[in-house]
Image 1 (tube, rainbow, N blue to C red):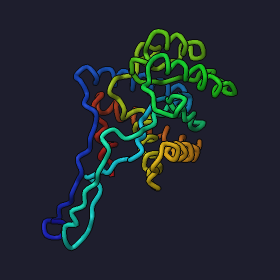
Image 2: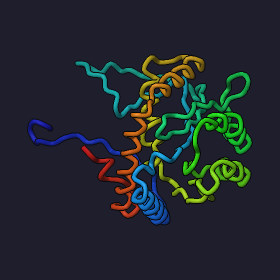
Image 3: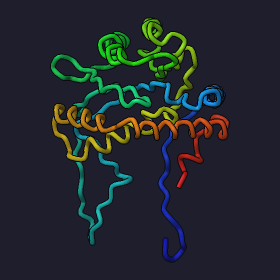
Length: 253
């Protein structure tokens, strides 16, 4: 096809479906962010972005990207467990590096569902001590609209240190829903970490945890700074797309 018809194979890009009302909320947020950047070009460096992610012991095989080149079909199958062991990780991402990881788990090391009580325990027991040596003047805290994040008790707790500087549903600035393409953890960090964590095929939870800690420790301030430069570009792209998908970034070559 390439040689005879001069055609090329392109992969379908998966994006999160946007609801009709999402476009306006994304435009509003981008306009606010760009206004802040106009006043202070370093504004992106004053946001702590936060999120959780699941890491499973068996990782995953991407059938779209994985190819076996052979002169005949090797008929290879890959068996996976129905409910593989996993860890649930929280991280903060900002210009100074990565805050975390924090593992939501019980005393036996089993992953726990993130609910409001556990999220607030993480804030009190882990996040606040991590921030003790930081000057939080003009520092914003971002989180998505998960119920455990936006419960009144959670927002009241966050206001103790980020009063007036919370980007969240129900916060001081509204975070648009279904917008994983504009949070650095989703468009960069989790994918980067997973690409490294599974390189040596960890077979136990302890090995998986060790890999996560090691890889996150390698994400330095310089790398974070470059990611935040990309975030600024994404704000302009949201404005150009009138709140739609970021096609000029997604399909950039």
